Length: 172
Image 1 (cartoon, rainbow, N blue to C red):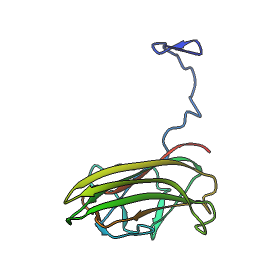
Image 2 (cartoon, rainbow, N blue to C red; image 1 turned 45 degrees about the horizontal axis):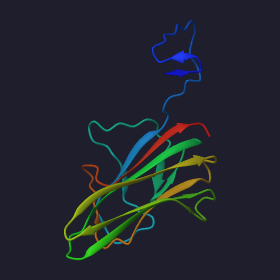
Image 3 (tube, rainbow, N blue to C red; image 1 turned 90 degrees about the horizontal axis):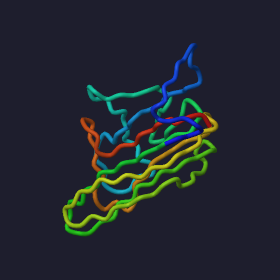
Image 4 (cartoon, helix red, strand yellow; image 1 turned 90 degrees about the vertical axis):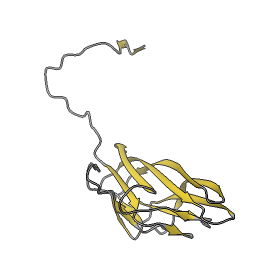
């Protein structure tokens, strides 16, 4: 296919240094370090995945008591994956929510919500995502919530069951 007169198989010769090409400057995966029964707003038991082959780009995304802060402005893709389990005999619904604040956490707007329904000892993984525009690293915050949780949201310090990942896609 052609885009602006170029073909995908065109070759280019560069005679100088390429600048402004960017690249990923932040990419990190946090996981719940232990399982969670019941509701939590925010979920607080996060740790950076730290297994032998775990990777990370940058160190700008941090969390304290479940509130995530950003070290640089930009557009971020956020993915929240939950692994839910119903250990009982009743049907359960588990909701995952992503919230963002532009005023240091005084108020939050819902960015994404997803849910799963489980039936009698079922287990299910599901993912929600959103993009946020971080324009002020002093005041922009993100948090994650689980509600309607009559089952269990799985977590582990040894492997990734319930996770949140942040990818900085580019400048704001």
